[in-house]
Image 1 (cartoon, helix red, strand yellow):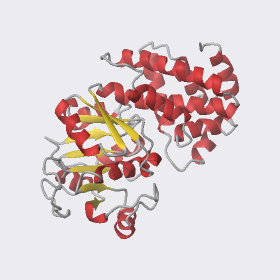
Image 2: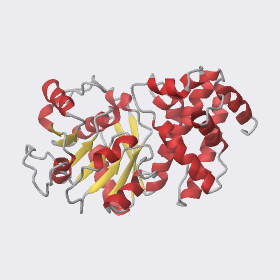
Image 3: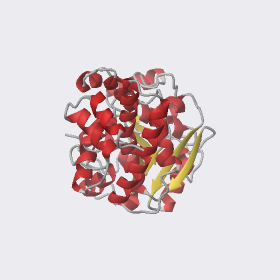
Image 4: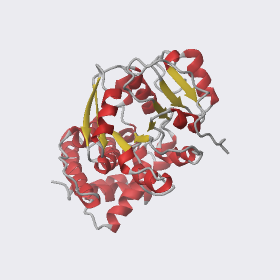
Amino acid sequence: MAKKIENDTSAFQEIPKTNPSLPLIGVVGSGSFATAIVKMLVENSAQVSWCVRNEFVKGAIQLKGHNPTYLTAVHFDVRKLNITTDINELVAHCDIIVLATPSIYLSDTMDHLKVNVSGKIFVSAIKGVVPKVNDVVANYLREQFGIGYKCQGVIAGPCHAEEVAMERLSYLTIAAAEEEVSEKLKLLFASDFINVHTSKDVLGNEYSAILKNIYAIGAGIASGLGYGDNFIAVFVSNAIREMETYLEAIYEAPRDVNESAYLGDLLVTAYSLFSRNRNLGNLIGKGYTVKSALQSMNQIAEGYYACDSIYNTAREKNINAPIIQSIYKILYEGKDAEKTFAKLVTRLN
């Protein structure tokens, strides 16, 4: 059991801030996107706290200046990093906490949280459903930890970790109910290679980030089956309209799904060779079983784990979502991908 810590931050070194107006920020997670987020943040902050998976990862970063497993080409000035394996130390020390673990592991990490979280801002960079509660991160934080929407934010794309590592121009959408929160986050993240847009559609951005992963699996299946660019273009144009229908049924808000956080993120995830969800679908389309496709990947394809919850919500709310339905049947009911897509073709326009 994690030790109880209220305000003890002695495990961290104190580094003078280059910009005293910036709040102290920390990142939870040590995968590729978490590593990319830390890279973004060290551009502006003299000090970034980082809660990693285990002592091996911590020691490797401290010794060699890079994550030993993910985005290994990204080198850090370790003097700017406060690295820990204890989420309580990080949360006690930081004003803003970015959650960037795979969704299936989030509750394992958060279950150790014992410190007072009042006044802290929690930002989700997670694009999946929390299995423990079968819900999105925003609702999980509110219901399990009493962290209200006003103390939350969501990071959306389009932004692949691999391109951040190469400092290729990338785009973030930061959604927060409070403008003060989104503006603070914008100052922390924006740089020469990161362009930041803000939004107030917290739940819409979170759900769209989940949905685009499911649709990317479908695009990958189509590619693996041998469908060409013409079909995939039609598939994606139908997917964005289906996404709009789904979002309106879940949470009505002023939004334009043609904006980058929705359509742009869908496009890059459906088409990019960096997309793990597209790659999972491509393997399935080429004849791999779902189980073997999952086992052959060294990263988490969030769309697989989210599809079950998203599909069941669509059924409960009577949402017309033939693409989600088709992908669910392939992933969870063992339906033949070729036959399922042959039927789906007749429903697209």
